[in-house]
Length: 253
Picture (cartoon, rainbow, N blue to C red):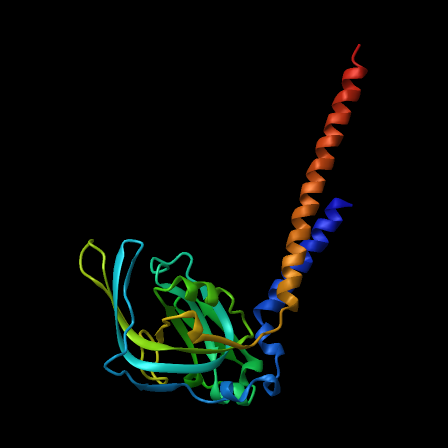
């Protein structure tokens, strides 16, 4: 009984995980907001603009605003930088798409994956996806509230993010400085083509619409159920062993 239940829950967890990876495809473009179907707004940084620095994990960071940046987009992937050496200031990578991709639903036949510091897109012959209207955006901040707010962003959400495209420099005390510089064009490719978006405060993050949660919740439910079944199985096995040992001791002449 326990083995069958465990196998069924494991299969359900795997299936729901697989579906959750592509959950962004299930949302039709008619559900997406007009703002998400537009283009990001990039304007010149002004003299009073600032992106406060901070010291995190042995790095002393300073940031220079290059441009103001305001983007409304559809989230096709999220990667929290838990294993990155930059996790002290880089809160997450967000896979974002907008414009033609959102307006015409091009994401629905495109496999999109956020992988470490980049994103991958693939589609079948005859289909189309506009790579200039999608990005893996590095979210940087020195504000703990921004970290908390970003953790609430899920695949399939529609978001508005405001901040600065920045150049960052970190002194480590272990040799030369570490430098990062944001892309300032949506049409560049390859290394250095990611936007580095510095967000100053939680109020600069807005979740305009929530994505589908069914598969994520089902995956969590089946995972918890699997753990409980394994615990129950272990307890039942322990009781059985104790019972058999007691019976053996009673019959030992």
